[in-house]
Image 1 (cartoon, each protein chain N blue to C red):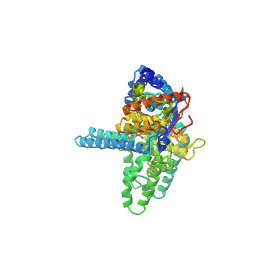
Image 2 (image 1 turned 90 degrees about the vertical axis):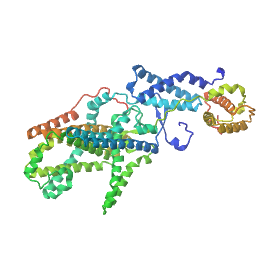
Image 3 (image 1 turned 180 degrees about the vertical axis):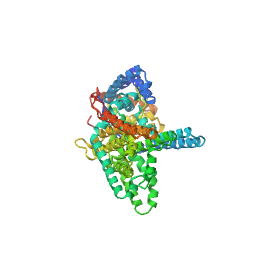
Image 4 (image 1 turned 135 degrees about the horizontal axis):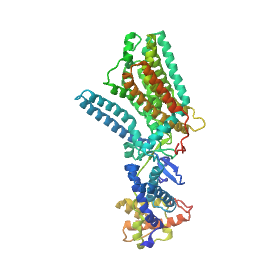
Amino acid sequence: MSELQLKSQRFRREREADWRRLEALVTKAEKRSASALSDTEILAIPVLYRSTLSALSVARETSLDRSLIDYLESLSARAYFFVYGARSTPLEQITSFFAHDWPAGVRSIWRETLAAFAITALGAIVAYVLVGMDSEWFFSFVDAGLVQGRDPGATEAALRETLYHTEGADGLSGFATMLFTHNAQISIVAFALGFAFGIPTIYVLLMNGAMLGAMVHVFVSKGLGFEFGGWLLIHGVTELFAIILAGAAGLRIGWAVAFPGRKTRLEAMSSAGKSAGAATMGVVVMLMLAGLLEGFGRQLITSDHIRYAIAAGSAVLWGLYFYAPRPAKIGSARGGS
Amino acid sequence: MTDLSLNPAARKRMRTLVTPEGVALNLELGTVGQRFGALALDMMIVIGTIVAVTIVLAIASSRVEGPTAELMQIVWLLGLFLLRNAYFLTFEMSARAATPGKRVMGLRVASRNGGRLTFEAIFARNALRELELFLPLTLLAVGPFMALDGGMGGWIWLLAVIWCGTFVLLPFFNADKLRAGDMVAGTWVLRAPKQKLMRDMADGGAVHRADFAFTTAQLDAYGVRELQVLEQVLRSNERVTVRAVADRIARKIGYDRGQASDLDFLSAYYHAIRERMEARLLMGKRRRDKFDRSA
C-alpha cells in the first residue's frame, strides 16, 4: 500500500502533527486568553505558524486535496491574527494609553480644540447678549431639567442659596454617578456625530456654550458673578475642557470625511479616527473626575477661594499633562498605525 | 470556502492579505446579513441583561433604605453605561476579536491594513454605534409621538429618519461592507470559520487502487474542478449520488467495472486521477476543468 501513496498524502502525514498542535494552541488562546498559554507554548506558536504557512504555499502548488488546503488556509489565518494581533497585556495597554496615546491624541487635534473652544465661546457670548436683551431667551437655551430655580426671575438670595447649598453627604455619590454617565454619553455622541461632516457636533458645542452664557448672565445680573465662577469652575475646568475635546474629536472626524487631503478618504478617516478615538476615551476619564469634583468637591467645599484654587490647579495640571514637551516614546514605531 | 471557482457572489467577498512572510491569505468578508444577525444577538443579550438587572434592583431596592439603596442606584447607572459602551469594547479586545453574537455567526473584527487591532480603533468603531444604532433606535421610538403632535413634527421626523438612514445603510453601498464605525477605525469584519482537518479521500482509494486499471486516456478525461466535485461526493458518501456519479464516469471513460462496488471504483478512480494531476502539477500544468485543453 505504501508505494501507492501519493506525494501529497505523504506530505500531509509528515506535517499533520504540527498542524494539530498549532490548532490546539490557537484554540486554547482563543477560548481563554493568551495568558492561559505557558512560555514554551507562546514561543512555539510563531514557529508552528511559519511552518504551517509554508505548508500552505506548498500545498497550493502540489496538492489537489481541497479540504486540506481549506484547512491550512483557515488555520494560517487564525494563527496570523494571533501572531500579529494585539499581544500586549491589558496593563501594558493602559500604561501606554495614559503615558502616550491619550496626550498624543489630544495634541493631534489641537486645531480642532481651538475651533471647538471658539464655537463654545461664540455660543456663550450670543446667549449672554440675547438674555441681556430679553430674559425670555433664557428658556430656549437652558434645558428645563437643569434650571432648578436658577432662572432670571429668581431673587438674589435664592440664587445664592443654589451656589452654597449642600445636600449633606447623602445622595452625593449617586448624583456624581448620574452626572458622569450623562456627560460621558453626551461626549461619545458628540464624537460619533462628527462623522456627519461635523455639523451636528458644532450644534452640540453651540448649545452647550449657549446654556453656559445664559446661566452666567442670570448670576452676573444679580451681582453673583464671582461666586458663580467658583461654583462652576471647580469642576467646570475639567468638564468644559472634556466636552470641548470631545467636540474637537468629532470635528476632526468630520474634517477627514469632508476634506481627506492627499490621502484617500478611507485612510484619512481611519487615521483621524484612531487619534480622535484616543482623545475621546480620555474625555470619559476626565468626566469621571469632573463628576467626582462636582458631586463631592463642590458640595463639600463652599469657600470661593478654595473653589477657584482647585479650578486653577486642574487647569494647570491638564495643560501640562497634554501639552508639555516630552521625550519621544522609545520604539514608537507601532505596527498597524 | 476559498474555492475561487465557486460563485461570483462568494468571489466578490474574498480579500487577499499578504502576510509579512509573503504568503497571500484568502479572507472572506462577513455579509451584511451575518453582521445583522450578530448585532441582533448582541442587542438581545444587552437588552435582556438590562431588563433583568433593572427588575432585580427594583425589587431589592424597595426593601432597603439609605446608603444601600443609593449604592444600588449607582450600580444601576454604571451598569447601564457599561453595557451600552463597554460590552462591544471588551469582547472585541479579546483574542477572538468578536462579541458573542459575532462568535455565533463566525465573524471577527480585523484591522484593514493587516496590522494589530488597537484599543483606540475598537473604541472608535463602537463609539460610532451611537450614530448608527442608538440614534436611529431613539428616533424610531419617538416617531409616533412626533407624528401625533401634528404640524411639522412628522415631516421633521421623516427628514431625521432619512438622514440617519444614510449612515445605517452605509454597509450596503461599499464593496468592503464597511459601516461608518469601520471606516473611522480602519477595521473590517471577516468570516472566521473553523475548518476541521478532514480525512484525505485518497486514503480510501489507495486500498482499492490495485483492483482497477485505468488507461492514460481514461485518467485525462477530467480536470481539477471535477476532481474536487468527486472529492465531495466521496466525502458525503450518499449511496444514490455515488451510484449516479459512478455510472456517469464509467460511461464517459468507457470503463466496465463489472461487479466492483461503486464506492471502491470511485475511490480508486479519484486516487488515480489525483495522482496523475498532481504529477502534472509539479510540471506547472494545472487543468482547470474538463474543457480546459491548454494543459
